[in-house]
Image (cartoon, rainbow, N blue to C red; front, side, top):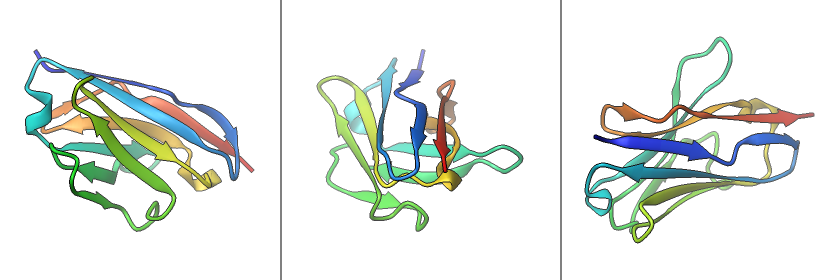
Length: 112
């Protein structure tokens, strides 16, 4: 069965950086795009970034473009989200996503 396990969240000051990881299992990882989403308190879940199966193409939400970088290591079945220049409005639970499958999420809190 498909499993997605996120890690790497935490508390960071504004302007700081965090690197999230999502370990995937249960399917042919390299054959599929992967997504990151986030959900802030009281708000709907929103798209953050996507990477193709080969890693050759990425797309970002306007709110994170230029600050976040999505990447993947197909040998380790892992997708990453490097988050730089973090802002308080980036505070949310971050989820990785593969079609209808979601991880449990990892909390990112950015203090001002």
